[in-house]
Amino acid sequence: MAKDGIKAIRYFTDNKILISDEIKKIRGYYGLSATKESQILGFGVNMYGKYESGEMPNVSNGRMIKICEGPYIFQRYFFEDYFFMLVL
Image 1 (tube, rainbow, N blue to C red):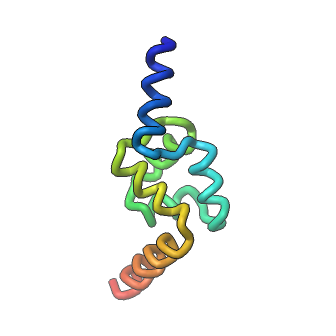
Image 2: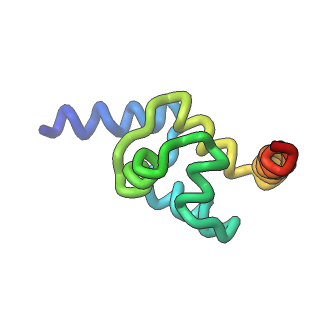
């Protein structure tokens, strides 16, 4: 079991993936519900909830969440998504 824990830590650090508390903190910073955050990122609501509960995201999803740390990038992405939805 200890080997699995070490592998998990290496996976998070090597791929610069955030842990569940950091993911929740980012969402809280923007004042979004988990549903809205998952929609913006293009994740299923259940999958995003699993990440906030401690499941490890794959590398690509982990990087998408990491991008949200930068307010400029996230807000730009959010507003582009928002305006796109208005056009539909």
